[in-house]
Image (cartoon, rainbow, N blue to C red; front, side):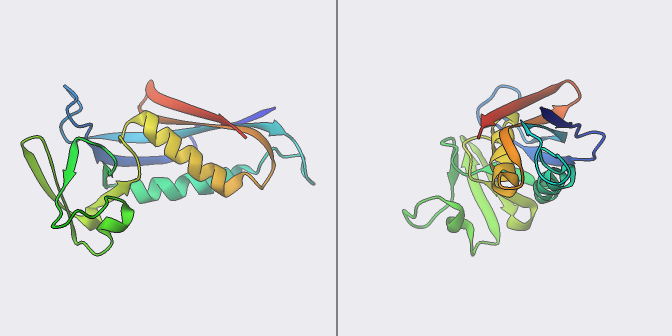
Length: 170
C-alpha cells in the first residue's frame, strides 16, 4: 500500500536561489519556487492501521523547506566551487562554523554572501535530483521507526511539470 502527499496542496514549498557551476543555462544564480511531493510504501500497522501518519511526514519535509526558504543553496562538495581559505583546512560543514560570510569563486566569478542568507548543503550539486536525495535522507531519519515502511520516494519540483524523484527501499 502507498500514501502520497502532493506538495502544492499540502503547502510543502520553498523558494530558493542556487547555481549549477559551469552549466550553460543554470550556471548563473537563479531561483525556483519549489514544492516537495512524497510517496511512502509499506504495510498498515498500529492502532489506526496507518503506513505512517501524514502529519509526521509533513512535519519532517516542512522543517527542511523552512531551512531552505529564501536562502541561496550552496553545495559544499562541488569541485567547481573554490571556497576562500587561508589554510589547507578540509572543506566540510565545520569549515564554515565561525564565518560570517561564505566566500567562493566559480571560474572567474567571485562571490561573498552573508552566511545567514545561505544554506550550506553537504552535497555535490544543488540540482533537483540531489535535493530529492537530501529530503529522502532526512525523512528516513525522522520517520523510519514510526511505521511499517518499505520505501520512501521524494519529488523535488522546480515548478509545475519539472522535477526529480528519488526513491529508496528500506
